[in-house]
Image (cartoon, rainbow, N blue to C red):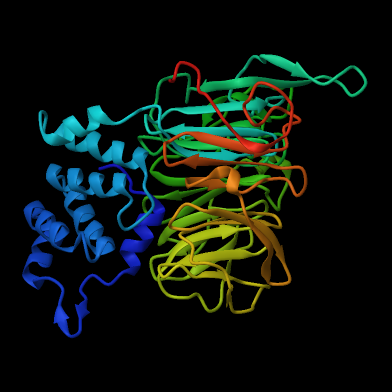
Length: 466
């Protein structure tokens, strides 16, 4: 079956499989045992019974049934995913589930639900220093603006921005479709770093594009690429001017990927983590994809400018990837979200936002409104509440200071933190499935086709999409 998102998987693994309310079992143990043994009808029964009162546990049972190849479990789980019950809504994940269910049972209600999905619905947004990319529920990726190193996945520039005094820079004025490997491969995950981006396709293969000259961030033995290319397991850096090429098979079996400033990391379905770029060695091995030692049970990964953090199945958090892993102290129970700015942050199932102020210290729970998601980059951090309100502030002195609502986003279901410390732009996905951007626009990164900054949100239109 298709990989499930890391946020949902983390919640499943950390929530008790068998629980009680006031001493009474929530559900028959025999039915739960049958579900875990692969009896799909038992999983559907448990999911229906727990959906209203314990949605996270309902999703856990339905996921077990779906992974066992039971179409009705996949369809029921997809319905919960679309409605955002038990975890943030994800139309892209729902689309994957319905595709699997429809393929297993042609003509079922899963096929009908799949036909009703709007492929134009934006499911995720990720911003770079001066470029923006989105992924739709139809599993397509679109990028726009700064493209001097192929950050938009385009080999040919559309326009040049700048003047003769400062040198013209290459940019893509309007959103352009990014084809993974030049083909219409469905994408499942997207992450934009500073000047490069990475994505996963439906087979768990990793594709990256943009600037790889700094430390081999593309992991394919090439300094830069305007075409998304597969990350490989044994690449060697090929310097600018040499023939592009690589050795070794593609890196496969990935569940998530993050792109940082000069590194990239992929969380594999096995729980292992593979990283490339930012090597502590020489440039000729910077692009080499290397496994993180003693980390084989990862559930969730989050990336910041200079490091990535991984939540493990045992509830621990390892940061400092790719090269200097360290285990965080005092991890609170039921972590369902991670972010990495100048310091690591976590969100727990009760809405708490936790921050590790320094290496070796225990975390503090911040005095902020309950949140369901957190994003960070450098000294910027943004939170989202269950109602969709996004608030952003600065990471200083072990807290998020000057936290202010970003009213221009309205009620958001997805968002990303600005990559620049000043003059940045931010983007969010609305409940209507559209992407809106606000802030700096010197590169046209708001997707409006001009270079005027905006205090009010701009709705980005994808070509050919109503």
